[in-house]
Structure formats: structure tokens, C-alpha cells
Length: 375
Image (cartoon, rainbow, N blue to C red):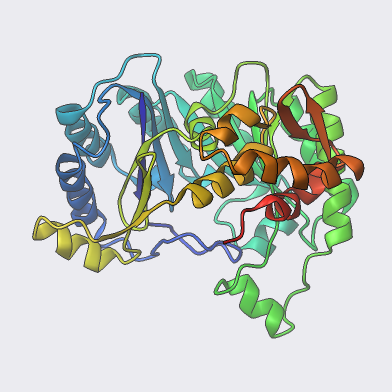
């Protein structure tokens, strides 16, 4: 079965750390929704399987969509694909957008999972990040969504910010646990080139994140959430049993998916394509029935490297039979490299499956790069 990602590239204001494609000018939102609907129809044959496992509205800020705009997109999807009540339909939402009316609109269109960008329950952090909501809204929006009937909720939290003391971080975790949320995604603050944060750090207007503090907070996160019954099933993701994010899990397991909208990526198992990250050019191309995208055929070594990168990040790890599927030469290459990581205590082996230890999770990207096939 297939998944669809729909990128909604609009935000009320720019979070200083964000490097995703978005615009704070909303005047073309209606026209862009029309272009998205057109791309859905044009791309109908990208994936052979028309029965959907997941639909994911990401961004940007999809909670800025009106009821009519959501209806247009679902109408276009319905022309091409089928799904059931069990299909995971996720919409990313900002706390300041969540109202009783909005939540009922989401439910009306079958959205059954909310991904809420909390980031922190402290105003000091939210102001520093240039978030549009405040600490009170961070809690009340979750309670309102639960009251309306959303029981499948995930929230984002950010650790490693210079404004987040270790005591504040522990309190963030405590607050999240008290709200009985089934899924938590937590990311280390990074300074991405081209972002406002990168500019501020470079000019000395803001402090650079402390890697030692971030590492300590990551450890605290793991210990507290796993002790409370959450499974650490991917480096940045924790879920109560069987509450994994279906859409993202399929990404990590190499399933096919279709990406719709400016900057969206697609994967058909053998190649990857990505749309232009420019709203005006995207809309103009769709008016001419052209999808403005680039495409890359993935070599066996690239597919092997991507499998190592994503697989090691999950509790399912990497398996020798999967590696063998990229070519017989990759298994001995992997086995030679993985021995050093096992000796260092970063990786554990159970039969033919290899997963990161808790210590190894702090160095996931570096471990993966050590195992990459280099042409």
C-alpha cells in the first residue's frame, strides 16, 4: 500500500530554526491549493497501489487551510485513490490555529491524527524560537483536541536550545507525560545554514546550542519516556505500544510514497524525485500541466546507504537479508565495518539484525556514515 505526503508551504511567521520550504505571504494560498489538486490528478500513476495506508499534510502549516480548501484536496484525492477508516490521515497543526471549529473541520474530512508543533511549554523558549503561540496555548490546544475526540495525537518538542535549562527540559517532559499523549517526536535544535537562527548565531546575536547540554537532555528524554512505557522506535520518535506513526514508519522501511506540492519528495523504490521549492514556479508549471520536478535513479550503493541511514535509526535495525538485496558485495562490506561499532558498544547484534545501543543513539549519523559504501 502507498502513502501520500502533501506539502502546504505557508506559515503565519518564520520560526528562526526552520529550513523547510514555506512562505509567510498567504495571498496565493487558494491558487496553490488548486495546483496541488491538479498535481494529484496528473500524478495518479506514480504509484501502482491506489489503496492508501496514510495521507500526511505537512508544511509549512497545514492548519492554515480553510474547510473549503481541505475539501478541494480530499475531492481530488478521492478521484484517484481509495482509503478506509483505518487509514492514518495526519495533519500538522500549530497551537494558535487550533479552535473548536477547526478541529471539527478536520474530523469532518476524516483527519484522525494531529501532529501539533508544541516545541516547548515555556514562553522563554517559544519567544527565542519565534513561535506564533504561547505556553498557555501549548497546553490548552492539546486538551481541546482531546475533548473534541482526537485520541491519536503526536507533539513535537525541541531540546538543546540555549534558553532551555536542564530543569526546564525535565519539566517539558513531565508536562507532556501528564497530558497522556500517545506519541512524542523530539528533535535536537540545530543551526541550519540559510535560516534566521544561522544568521543570528553568525552575527553574535544568539548563542550557539551547547552540544553537551543537548546530549544530556537527549539522555533524560530517553530515560523518562521509556520508563513511562513509551517505545523509542526511532531516534527522534517515541510511542506508546502500537501507536507508531504509520506514515513515517513506512518512510524508514523503504515503502513507496508520492509527494505533492512545492519541495515535496517522492520515492518509487528505484528512483527519487522532488518538486521545485518555489511557489510561483510550481503554480505556473501546473497551469501548463507540467510537474516541475527533478528525478534521480538510485544506484544499488545509494539504496544501500539510505537503508543503513534510516534502518539504524529505528528499533527494527538493519538486517543482512535486506542488505543482500542490494547486491551480494554489500554484506561482507557491512560485516567488516560493523565490527568496530560493536566493539565500541554502539551497536548490538541479535542473530542477523543490528540495532543501536542507547549510547550509540547519540552518534547515529556518524555510525551510519562509517558504514556507507564509497564508490
